[in-house]
Length: 198
Image 1: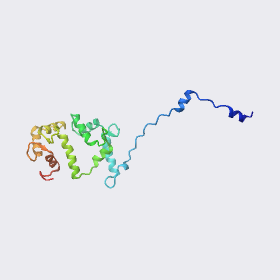
Image 2 (image 1 turned 45 degrees about the horizontal axis):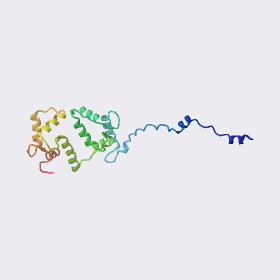
Image 3 (image 1 turned 60 degrees about the horizontal axis):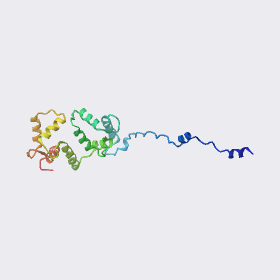
Image 4 (image 1 turned 135 degrees about the vertical axis):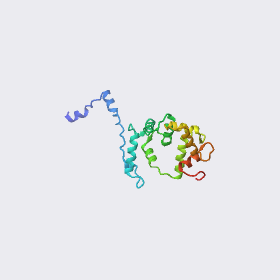
């Protein structure tokens, strides 16, 4: 028998069960790579340049303390407090978050933050945005702001105002003098329009 014939007839060594298990197991997947920020992905010349996107990103990173890529409720609270606005109620934080978190992820991501920072204001957008702000003040959801609600909001925002100052603010906002600040009153005050003209 020649050497070549001998090799063909010798069966290959059988792997042990341990060897089979090791061969069948897939290595663990590598950890997901964090996407590298590229301002050009968000730039829309001539309305939004790469440099402007980078400026907005710097502001976003200040709020995103943990570098997670989203501003969570705690970071939002800290941002308000750093701005001098005291937030005593979680409801206020979650209302603001709910208005800005368009994908309902539980945080404000950079795209949402960029949209907020660069949104063009049209009359329709202005009215919608003012409605959102009005809704934050309208605690009872009655479609009008009472003197007590205005006082509560001033306290929640950390404003140290006397009752007389709050009353003066309320009278200025209650343009039709009906004892309530309706959305139309609020809208006209915020846009500096005379009452009845829209």
